[in-house]
Image (cartoon, rainbow, N blue to C red):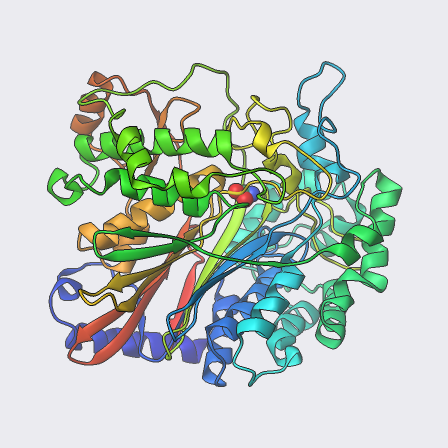
Length: 574
Ligand code: GLY
């Protein structure tokens, strides 16, 4: 790590001297590199991706390695027991996506989360074994490597760093130490979690070493047997036995039947950029695409960053797009989604006319839950051949439903809460969703994860890589990605400034605009309140990670990247 840090400092020094214009004018610099870039929420994971790129691997190889390491070193969100999405641009310019979202077990049913009073019971959908969807991450990370990897690195090499960190241990960073201390009462109520993370009843402290021998055994099994190492054999037996003993529904049959889907990306053109995102069962690509197309005719740069006019236009576009999301979207294997119509020019022109001039629109009045603790993580990889990988993965809440699978050492997700447990009632993120996202056996729950790849489109239609962006933050992921993109596209910010600029959020219901501290001046807040907006201060709306390609500089092609949040995000490259 020290060598990497030294290299970063060296590159940083070099870039300050070499790169003219906006970069020199900046006070805050991202990580820069010349041959490849990895940005993730955790330094060991970024270093693992860096090693893979150095060894000749491409962005897909590195993305798979980063994902496996995060399962060991960022266990609140990095995972084997959760799911995620990949958006991948091959160096030849073709863009692909993989859907490895969790699925409801076959025995799941529409009303399984209703309590005796007929209302959704959050304990069931968030903290019980019923909260767990069939994990997709191991299959997704392996498919990323198999389908898009360079072919130069074996499965064992991809998993080697994760295995060694789980087996030999590592010093947990501040974020993990704090998270485990904060969640101690709940997490240590699961004996299997307690044994790994609170050994002898002790809470980890900075400088301690966290070893995860059971997780290492699971990783070794995956390294040796591929997807069968997780979805059949003793790991699957352990998971199914844990479910059967504790009232969960996932069976060996559910695990054996799990498949990753390769899907077309959702692509929209926006002012000289092409933005590639994830289609359903993620809502990220559709909502981001709708908001951008609704905003396209407006001169956002002239309005000024985080001005009252800027906030008004973004919030009204978000209100319209989230209303469509919550009504129309669900798993496309189960519900008909009019995606092309939702993104069509005439439809969005008609929707844009609903944006009121100079005053707040109104979402339906309804009760809502406050966003609870959430945890998802995003990482970006750029390789020197122009390959771009955007991956977002999650257990849903921080540490998922809280239990580690006994003997197998990984946390289980609580992704079933992303379904509409009772259509019309808010979920963990306050999202009020409809029938299209109700629970059914084998169905995938709707997501807000928004891994995004952006290219610049030339006058001749050719595309050059521009940005890789994504975020954590539940329902706030989409608006975070939107604002990071607009900061880069319109406000001359470098990638660090774009990621760290304070953000705001609106999601149709609840009908409030959430603001991070210092997002808006007192003047701007007064103007917005005068227009009829209800403003709510929130400590932080989610974390973002982004990387970008800097071209046309005298020095050739450079990459820059940054991850914010909790002070542990790490970028690295060479
Ligand atoms: N679990 C958060 C999401 O997928 O939107």
